[in-house]
Length: 68
Image 1: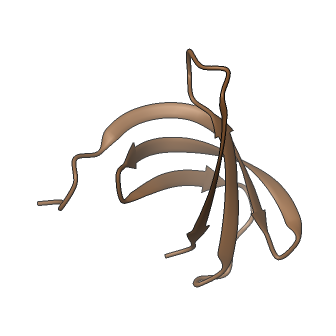
Image 2: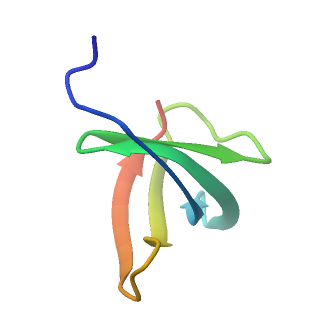
């Protein structure tokens, strides 16, 4: 069982890693992480910046993260 509840929600995400921007699609999210599908591989352990706007919102979110 997961430590935090995950929510299925699909929305586009911009992932910036190694000074390169990629477009991804978030599949699910929780208070502890996000599963996003991206067309090119990201290095495990890479530090990333995520930029996204949730559905039904106009506020852009910018978060720092790490690829697991």
